[in-house]
Image (cartoon, rainbow, N blue to C red):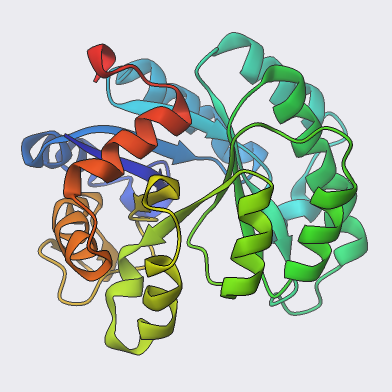
Length: 259
């Protein structure tokens, strides 16, 4: 069984291919995938995918730091309503980003804090995006009196020192197929030093294509590439392939009987 801990199956670039993608995902053995919303406009598509494919899709809803200016005045209520409607829904993709040109960390911080608050309130896993904002992230998490019990650093690219601080806070980390590129050896070495039970695997499809992907779809990362990513990741990190799916099931609270 394969478990994609992070993708964007709702992305408009998949609109002409989605049914075929899902069929191929099932054929290669993907039993679950977390589909991450990034803006209010795509949350309905995530919800519909979860309704149409409840045995495959775990919905996750959040405001990506790249899209904060498009939010409505009632985004937080809408997000809370989605979590109430779906007891298995996660939160994210959300977080902090200082790589973004003209970023406004002063805007990002309080919005991210609201995501964290919801994760605590509803006891849901939260998927965190962080680029070049590790200091603010650690400060925010450490000053919180109560933290979400399940923190996932998606496509983690920070330092080992930062990872050690995040581990103390209970964090998990997802490895993207893009990190299999030889020039990402430094990131691979950091993952080798993390506890094996804290590592998940993701595609981040349609982005973050692995080197020499098995499935070619224009210039997009096909979500069925997960099978080969897991095999290669197991070799690179010296972790059994089945460990990754087990870690994901534990993190997202999916019983084996549910597959």
